[in-house]
Length: 613
Image (cartoon, rainbow, N blue to C red):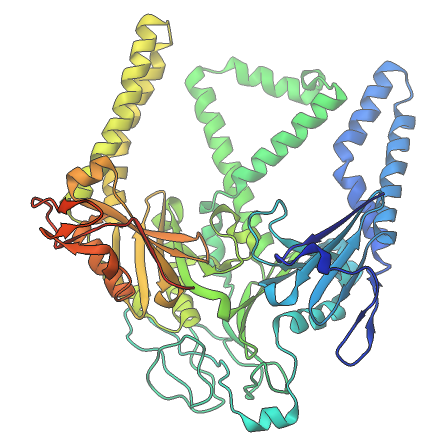
């Protein structure tokens, strides 16, 4: 048997022991098993996961020897045995320093997460879990260099035990009464609702200010500020710091409105559904050696489709696909975000709950938050919608944002996304401030790149059509696609912009997906200044703020070099000073004077500047 110890949080593997661990008070922490009710769920999960293979065994055995049902039953029995063994071979324990999971039969593993490395706690309940009163827990460490994303999974625990475990892992334990009486610590409360363009959010009485918030205008102690919609109320008037004893309260920041479902068809999540269904059917057909054309209804549909004109077949196929994707996207929106709710707890965390059939709850510590991203995909932007994503350490972004737990608001009106973002980060200016344009050089670069890409592709396909016999429609299609590339290039330029406002670096870019990111200046750990050959000829540069959160870096694209240096110095005063020389002064790195023709007051001698995180 292979024994493996894995430390997910970066701790040495030899720090994990195999026996009971003693707490500071002398009590031993024993290994515990998952809920016995998982003896129902684990076997069912294994059968569902192996369903295509079992169906394939049924068809293959029936066509070759007539014993397909026996092969299928044998496979079913093996899957049920594997699912049952998962419960007997999986144990876990929570110590003052670690969360550990021990699993495996032939290959024994002990997975360890140091509690000070825990970034998020995800709670998911599928249909069977909910029927049996269970929930699956995923403890995230923020490690993105691992195959499993640096998560430890407990599948599954009783729901009441999950709530207690989540509070224990993300909130500090109550301090002694003497320590609580000796100090008064701030605790977060609700912020005022913020309309776009407003300059203030409102504050609270001393001792209860939201971490990282900047506001003006008093709010009575214990009161809850206005909400953008009805229902934004606090569950209690008592503010309790996570280091003091008392009940945990929460304030609702936003909740799903039925009117938001209209944005569902424009998310295009139904495309994934189409791909999954196509892959599932293809696998069954392949493993079961099934001829779909031998099925009567399928044969009739194919024959009637082939009898129509070509243009009619293409139009009908596209229309059918669009309708199916729109319906699937809307259903997916309802299933994923029904009963969506974003709250702030007095323990200094943001809590997201959502889901119709499968429910999910994600808890994020606000001290991990470094900024916010307002994402506007092209179709969603056309109907005035946007999504809100947290820029935080330990959370995935981009295509994995929803799955990684960083989504703070599903597709909703842009004004709602701005209001919620302002209430999360504590200021509204980064969401509504005017951005500085990037000038005509950046505009020319957008059109030049679009023409260069499509022009080169068209020329290459034309040459291949002339000398290698490629179909003529290939280069003709590339030539036609050059036309929509022009307005797309213009839109990419209109999306460019940046500023520093409300203590945040604000940058915007993109056309197919336009993103506006407000990154807290305290979360910036360095600057990266890049200049390609063509950028140097145009006097442009790309300034990237490096950070430990989100995408690890957020760029101000194709900005004038002097403006890039000014922005960097304004973002972190003095950080770039050792790397700059005035124009015309000797440079030790270059061994001579800077080029006199360079249209800027200074130039960078080093490509990257960092400060201590």
